[in-house]
Amino acid sequence: MTTTIHASTLLVLLPGMDGTARLFHRFDAALRAQSSIDTQAIAYPAAPLDYAALEAFVRARLPRDRPFIVLAESFSGPLGSALRADPPPGMRALILCCSFVRNPRPMLAPLRHLLGLVPFGTLPGFALRQALLAPYATPALQVELATALAQVPPSVLRQRLRAVLETDASRSFARGSLPVLYLRARHDRLVPPANAVQILRQAAGAQLVDIAAPHMLLQAAPEAAADAVAAFITSLSAAQALN
Image 1 (spheres, rainbow, N blue to C red):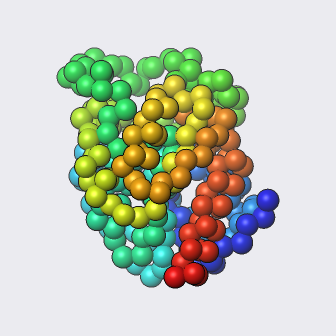
Image 2 (spheres, rainbow, N blue to C red):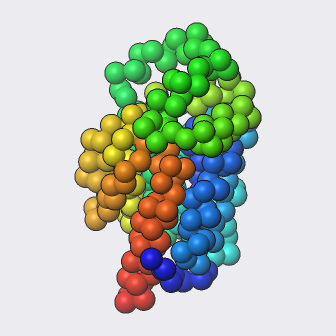
């Protein structure tokens, strides 16, 4: 399906826990093939920063000369929530992809003090494939995931996981008023399906799109994700034209 949107709209991409923004290329290509949407990916520093520091980093890099929509993937959900609660000039909406605004696995929170024992640099590929890609893993996706994670020091991954286990941005998220789209993967093994229900309750009028994909939805099902995102942005453009 070919979708026409306002040419000046920009989609700002905030990455998952790897933070490299290297894993957006499949989704970006699919989006450009079917629409005129421009994208800007923000890669995070390879440093052990908490969500507050990352929020400041992201805000400093958001566009100031054109309207934009933020797509927060997985780990970046609390950052998207903070932006929605206090939106910078030009921000028009938030898209959450397999993401969360508070710890999606609260039963694991007490284990955050044991993260120093987790061998992030030597985790077996099988475990990562099962958690992030199964049952849609391909050799190419496995290589791309391993390459991205290899760019991030274990100490940084450890800090980001600790941030996830400690976060609860649900109150600030609920204060926001910008439109929300949630992309939910039907085979997500990290973020429970009920997480999306909680987010929909907190954001009046939020939209939900289910896609047959694993947690790495944008990478495993880029065309379906691009279609959903383009349709959402088109609906926003149409609504704004009526106002």
